[in-house]
Length: 107
Image (cartoon, rainbow, N blue to C red; front, top):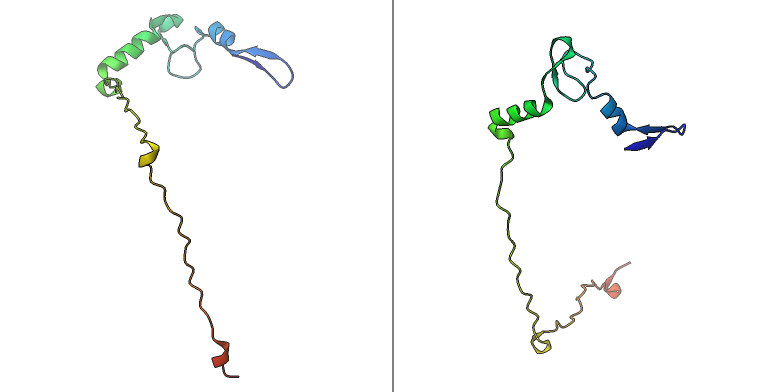
């Protein structure tokens, strides 16, 4: 992932992440930037892969449920012959128009 800033500088984020993988993260978690647990002296006590594997072993709800893939059955499309196709007849809609009889009006 290479980005160019508005000032035209090029920043390679992947290279930056790789360079700082073993740098201790800021905060009180005692991990490095990669997620490995760090003990005294900055030595790695548990790798990130071990932490993730342990999490999935102890939490059964965290494991994705595996389902068998659904096999769709293809249905053949049946097209009826032209003789069987029934054409719908056009019927105009009837509009109700109220007629007023002006001769019966009294002024």
